[in-house]
Length: 289
Image (cartoon, helix red, strand yellow):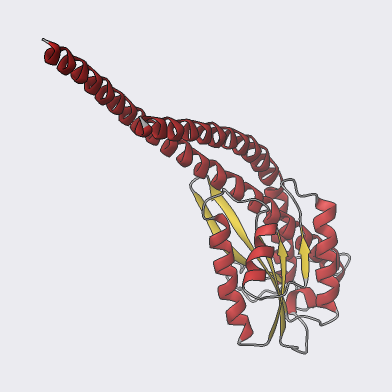
């Protein structure tokens, strides 16, 4: 009897867990769909503005901006922003990005001082456990706002222009597809320019800029930094939700399978109990004859 009660309690608990994980899966699916739409909407603008920066910089060898070339005097200081989630239940999302970030931090420590900033409660807890003090802690949430991210980018640009840091890196989970999310350490500043595949014909610049290329870059570069950081936050949210969706689906399937096993064990225990009681009744009746 005690075994049957124990199985019933476990079966009830598993059923409750299954309903919770199923609900969390549905919520994550809805959030993923909305986040994916936002990320897809901002991706073309981000790619295009970086392409414009690349074209202007490569077509004008004299173009010189600290956001491209970096500070003239190296200070040996680097800043790393790690974007994590506020909540768990998202598989290996936080483990991947935090492990990749720590690899970069350890590498940069060999070159000088590393200043670490974190976004998301999971980053706060991880770096506290690792005895690494965060210079700045921020929470962006599931719906990053451009104004909020632009303020962070403006602070980074100001610090970089003043020579406080040699480079600024951002660790986040880049979304490629529903089945592939890649932890990436993006060098936000100085901005890396994609190489042009066209061969150098020696004919000089193909463009004549008005206003000058320096003026154009001074306008484009801060925008490119802001949009790149905003895209990183958007990609991080999409990756978090898709990994939570997959994790909750797996948990729901596991709970369903465990529930099936418990139902089988319950039926067997109940059948055994009934058989035992019938045997006792028959044995008692036979003893009275």
